[in-house]
Amino acid sequence: MDATAEPCTDFFKYACGGWLKRNIIPETSSRYSNFDILRDELEVVLKDVLQEQKTEDIIAVQKAKTLYRSCINESAIDSRGGEPLLRLLPDVYDWPVATDNWEQTYGSSWTAERTIAQLNSKYGKKVIINFFVGTDDKNSMNHIIHIDQPRLGLPSRDYYECTGIYKEACTAYVDFMISVAKLIRQEKGLPVDENQLSLEMNKVMELEKEIANATTKSEDRNDPMLLYNKMTLAQIQNNFSLEINGKSFSWSNFTNEIMSTVNINIPNEEDVVVYAPEYLTKLKLILNKYSARDLQNLMSWRFIMDLVSSLSRTYKESRNAFRKALYGTTSETATWRRCANYVNGNMENAVGRLYVEAAFPGDSKHVVEDLIAQIREVFIQTLDDLSWMDVETKKKAEEKALAIKERIGYPDDIISNDNKLNNEYLELSYKEDEYFENIIQNLKFNQNKQLKKLREKVDKDEWISGAAVVNAFYSSGRNQIVFPAGILQPPFFSAQQSNSLNFGGIGMVIGHEITHGFDDNGRNFNKDGDLVDWWTQQSANNFKEQSQCMVYQYGNFSWDLAGGQHLNGINTLGENIADNGGIGQAYRVSNNVFFFFFFLSFCYFLGRSRHIWRFPG
Image (cartoon, rainbow, N blue to C red; front, side, top):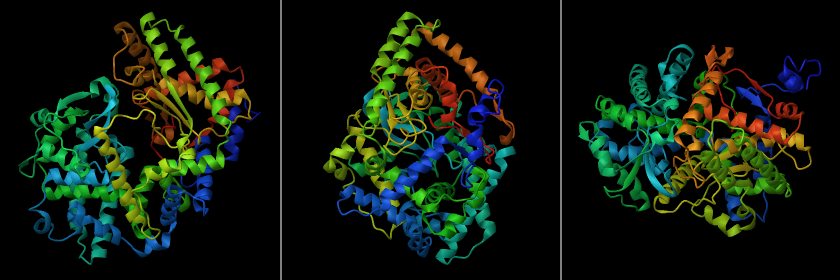
């Protein structure tokens, strides 16, 4: 705290002034908060447990440690240059700009269905069309195929305006493409015509701009009722016919090309949920303007872009200007940190076991259960104060709140059931000197696992997060709140610290996650996790009217360092509702010093990047 500050004038400085003096933003970051400090501490724990060799390690843990060693083995990675990528490229129809005679080699066998499908089915890379297997929103015990608009190479569709604060990012993005294409051609021993590289990569940017502009803005995708469009595969063919490279696109061939990798046949009568009908309609007008070469240049680039960081230093450095434009820094995260996070992201239960054994006290679960019970009770009490919500809707809201299931710390099985943990990673086999191949193995394994779920029931007991994660979650399809062991640490939580500090930290987070079940998205799902309209029309109308006030309030916040850029009040509505709800509930349970302890837990810096970032939640 800063006792010299006047709390009634600047409460943030009063509570966080001391923290601001003691901390600086690391060169590798564009923001810094207690979340980031806690992540730093967690990564140190992961480093220690992953590099420690123990003869008693179970097989799953041994594999996690082998994967970690392959990632930090920079001498082996550097000695291979781009060779692992070059060997892989023919498997995805290569990258036309980085090879000679592409049309003669691949032109006759190239089809859009096969190429887009292979990137998806083998490597989980969803370019142009986002095909995935996920929970059926309206029947949350079942899985279903979804078709959606793709993610983009730049952080959002706004970047493709390429003006103002986005101009530098666009230029750096194209330069990044050119640099990598040049490196690959040089490594192949092919001549480099920089004018030709520039011409082709600018064509890729032109195509990606058109795709970006065809996507629906995020603020227009917030209503899950409107997103959900169920139809058969045959109806998709009729409603969204595409022509690519002069040939009609077969949705059936495309779908079965993907699902055949897990031996599942998809008939034309199969139900599919289309999240982006407007995008698919616009896509038809875009794709018939570009050649197979143009489309393959884009698809291969998006695949290569994700893999550059797993190659030698020369390839990694090709990203520097791009990273600078996006994040305000070219400083790389320490290798051990990046590798600890990578292993954690791909083997979350094996790494979670190590983290829990090293850093999570056994009595913490029961204390958090009590905090959740108190805050849930307060949430239900606050329903009575909502004059705009009628009795019928309040009753169903209370039923939903009581039905919320909590997951605290970690799944017991990762500690107690060695066989289950070993079997989870049974198909994986890593080599210490083949980091790139290990990455490809993980991509294939994870995508195969997800596609297989189509004919399986949803396991609602399955955790949606690993244990070694500094964040908390609400799942609308499971009506479940999750507080991993990683966030159940000081200053957010400790079984030994005061209730006031716990309520100001994890208490607010608990209230935040509970409130997500009733925000602009979560309110559309019932107590069982199904997409069902359980609100009366009057209460729904009142909710929308009340929330507009918050949209307007937050939409008027701007940040000078981001060139006066305003927050998007629509995109941030769910988080803002959850923040306000979480603070209100934790305050009612706590006492008058709550806000001081809340600010202590959530002190932060923002800087360097000219773009607005959101906090975890």
